[in-house]
Image 1 (spheres, helix red, strand yellow):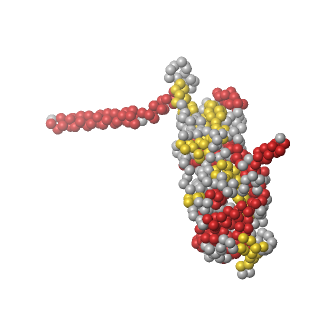
Image 2 (cartoon, one colour):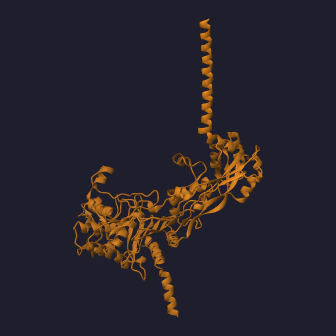
Image 3 (tube, helix red, strand yellow):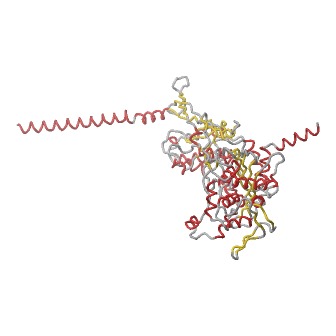
Length: 594
């Protein structure tokens, strides 16, 4: 009898244990769902009884230095898809077949986006922005056939000056798969900055989207709007505004002058003392407004073929003769020549049996200033025969070559400022004397960007500092301080020789076409040989007024010929506008007639 009672007690205990365990599991599950999963299931319940639309935050406005608007927003219509209403591939293909007949769009991209919609995502995904009224009307008319599709108003980026400053500003377009993998905080269909300021400062400019939650019945129709909770709005927060250092009027003149040269290239204007960029142009350019909706493959291929996205101010080129002031500094500093020495120039210099020719065969005896003004290669070959590559590279690096400029843009190249160690490591050869001769006139392995040239000549202009370049003036109320310039020391007599040579270049030398009537300009021409081509890059660099410099202008025209006849013409138009030469002439003419 005792054994039977023990057995019953054991069974009861087991049943009680099982019951308690199940109760504990159930309680734990309820606790988990109600506490840890509360937000998830509340959202699911909410999404099943409401429709959420995104209130897109307007991007911050971009201004020039004088508060002229250069990038803003305008109201537009967008089409969005609700993935949780388009669950099957069949539904998505059906939707695509209808939309592809309505929208003026890149049909391949539309199809890819629809097929890659995240499964069951309740929030809408933007399919396309900037719909026409006709497109929006047709979608509304076919709404009964498009259950997972809606249209909504939102601000879209607008560039009032079209192509103007395109390479500075960049453009906005839908995020791609590669960007999406690197930016998990973004979602498919988001509009993001793709280049320029728009890309680098995307998080600053974009703001924070809001939401509009509309209660719906089981058929998806809005419930009675008189019910106080039928609509809930969470307002968006606009992006922060940015003021740039550029002057949009000077930018316009710079771009027009560059475009009129009919050659690809770059032109920039920099404050010689602060490094602030007043204008930065690259040609050919593009209109960033075209990217407010997907563009066709044909147009994209045309852009690529014409290389319109290249910001040539950031690219490294052989500088040619605009490098010669560096060689002259190196020769004076190394004391291989004295300030008052003169050099016999002529048709060529020979190194063994190798001929190193000059651009002209005219024979003369020139001072160092005249050699620089007339860009006589044979003078610099003679200096190079007494220099090491390290002598030259040291001065190039000191004045800003071979290093990034500080500009707030992505994609700036570093270039190459070679020496014997560099050649050994990169090419596996020793440095030959002939390499130094090429180096002395800005050829050979040397590569440098227009931005670096702007720093070098600004340093020569102000005589004591190499300014960092800067595009951002303010972000909302935050005033961005100027980056600290790099100090450099040079013997005043050496600096005077170089400056006199640059002034002489414009007054009576190869840069005469850039001469102004009322302002003294110092400058240097350059015609850099292009590897694999018989053509030369046309360079011209100037600063003015020569006696108290305000601006440095750099121009390069790719494969366009001589610097004195092409790039110098572009620079002349920029300088004339900045110093109001045309306005002064008009005033003088009017004064004569009074």
